[in-house]
Image 1 (cartoon, rainbow, N blue to C red):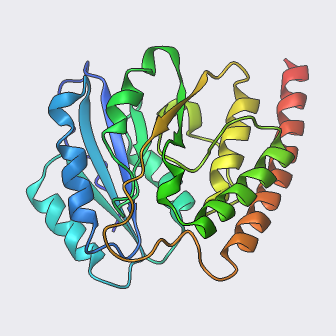
Image 2 (cartoon, rainbow, N blue to C red):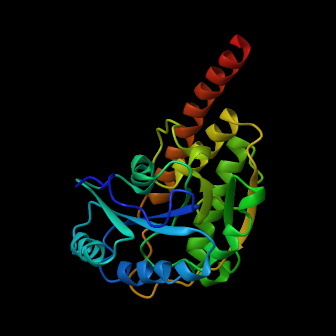
Length: 258
């Protein structure tokens, strides 16, 4: 089911809009609470709010839960992927359903992130095009989970030369800062490729970093650590890096042709 691109958005055309994309994979027990927490922020933030709920080919009742939420909450719209595409592809495919000029954030449906961080991020929007969140309380994660994250980000920093503390946490960004960029990698690797290409396309992109708090999962296990998942993520990072190299050459040629 495609997103409802003609849905009426809240507020006036002149109001700033925050679109929160909520990707979900088999989160029927947690996503309703996550959505409720985001909606509860509406009176506390200085912008209008809407949510795009993405069912990424779930095999449980997630899609039905999202449909029920959208039926009663006009600020929520739904996209249902015909199969599992991964978080990265789910987010990128939602961009055409986001109003131009919007601020965008991505909050997974598993309830692990304290969504009140969006209030803090929005305070930075006057001096940033992209706000990258980094984990303030990593001890809430298991040693195995922290080690996997460390390995992943060490590879990313080595390949890309990034000095960012964390790439796969919640973000806030102007839609135009990241939209329209071709991305070949998926999963967690897509963030590194997308940000690298965004910086190549717009070298003066204003990127700031800010902390966020993890709440831990109330139910179930994290999908970030699966058998062979780390190796697959590193493989995807390497593939994305090759695509970035091609994109860099293209940006250089276009710059010299001007």
